[in-house]
Length: 102
Image 1: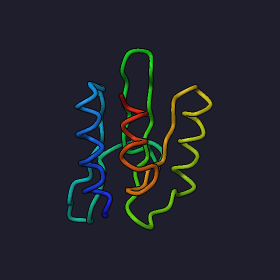
Image 2: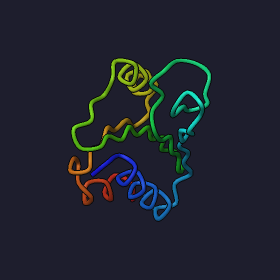
Image 3: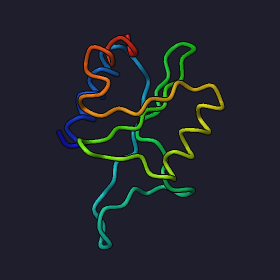
Image 4: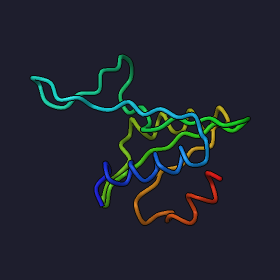
């Protein structure tokens, strides 16, 4: 499964379980696909909050790998006491994602 299709499943779960969340989506420009953000590269895919819980989610398609820049962000969020997860379509699996998000 590609990352875009997997992300759609995660968005649906976040909404179903009433998380407030955001994902900055890339846009096609004259220089190719770009995400219009300033700052350091590798920002996580999804930031979500509900009650006192703060989630940081990095999503990968089949075979995707976390880059060094992404890992730096994830480590910093984890050090700040966010719940950090890197998910692939089959890992952790739908049942585990529901358990985390409900």
